[in-house]
Image (cartoon, rainbow, N blue to C red):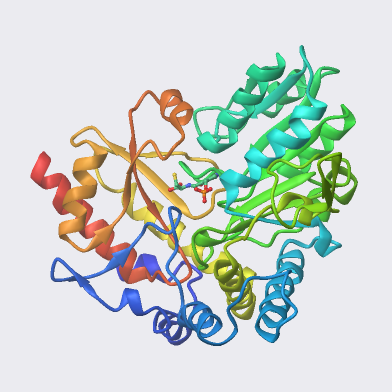
Length: 418
Ligand code: C6P
């Protein structure tokens, strides 16, 4: 039965998929005497050999601190590091690499916006609209800012499918709206948000829009010019790259007037005890020695994704999601949480028979790695009146056989609890 179902989904050709999987040493193992079925890529994706080798080679041959040495290694390291800025700009469709600030990831990028743009532009009485679908890292920085300056954080509600209520959004926008914060894809339940439409409306009201792209950059073509977002943040570790790095895109016109956040090396123009002047963006926002090797690895990850083709990645992942959704919906007592028409990468579910954490523990016995918890999105859980979900998330290296292993293991797990 599963075989028949499978043929209706647009999976990548088996040979190509196998050649992709072969590039991931970590996937070639058994866990609890079962083939590892890794369905936790929304938390962190695994890395292909090209990324692993790239960071190893860089540290073996070219490593040095950047931007501040006249010796060969420093110049080589600097050139490679700065080359990644261009790659990331291309990946996001930005017009200039000076619009790309390297950060330690999405969380750091959003906090940077709140602490620089936010602290200078948001005033007492202003309003910050934040969607109900957000990860805590796109809620709490705005609450901290609001507390500091006397602004208000207002929630953009969603419906019971996990779709943002755009009518409510339109109604909330007004002269006091200074900023809209929304994710492109919701990590807890996978909804794809209409950020282009939301950006256009935000701009009509003179508001800026911050897009958290942590869960979209790994799964779909990003074009920040077409989206017309003011800021866009992502983390490399969710897109086959290293942890500890990521980037913030900011429109040049906004970055130009933003004060620094952290002070230190590289972000200055001239320092004296009489007063200090600051470097231009993006360097103004990159104080101190960055995670140089991780940035180099991020460049390799971008190359790797583009080598496969983002469209091809998206098509295959959508097939995995569609197939898994179909099979899980046939299991009695299991409820898919997040039933938006447009979803990417993530399948969250709830069973009345077992707590998600117990499901996660039993699935691990079958070699299946899923995440269980609130996924740092407690308002989403609150909306659905549940404490947590179990969540399977997909990447380009997952196969229809992974989906089947997961579904069979889930059925067996639930039998244990029934
Ligand atoms: N979500 C997940 O399992 P950092 O930690 O800075 O790389 O990313 C934070 C973050 C921000 N926004 C979204 C939409 C995210 O999904 C995440 C990370 C992980 O869903 C860990 S909770």
